[in-house]
Amino acid sequence: MKILTLTIVLLFSSLSLFSQTTAKGAAAPGPEDMSVVALDNADWSFYADDDNRTFYVDFEKINVNLSDVVIKNKNGKIVFKDDVVELPVNAIYELNFDELGIGDYTVELRSYTKIIRKDISIK
Image 1 (spheres, helix red, strand yellow):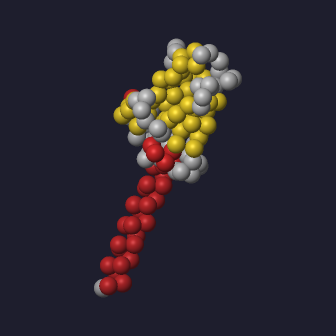
Image 2 (cartoon, rainbow, N blue to C red; image 1 turned 135 degrees about the horizontal axis):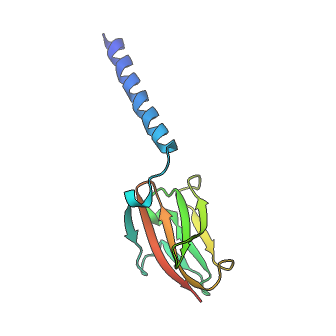
Image 3 (cartoon, rainbow, N blue to C red; image 1 turned 45 degrees about the vertical axis):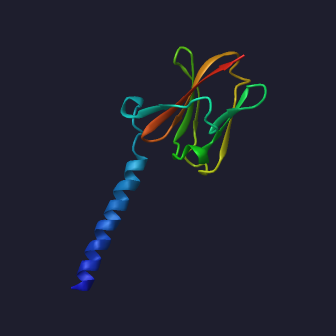
């Protein structure tokens, strides 16, 4: 009886793990399915260098496993997108705006459940 109970528990546990794994492989939810959080200027998880052309994102301070980083121009067009799922949770991610030029941008740090937004201006 104990072996049967243990087998059933292990079977349901492995099915649960399998369903979570396959759900991760599914398409990421669209922005309309996610909660949106805006970063304020005092948040040190997102900061700039002295000339404000390179920004750094401290993944460890965000406390969310990110799926991708998106930069949109002021018209909402995606001008940069990078898949960051494989990066470690304690990474510091660098965004260099030299190639994008002067203008207003929105940086979106996306997880599977929410979007963290930061509006920036490059001069």
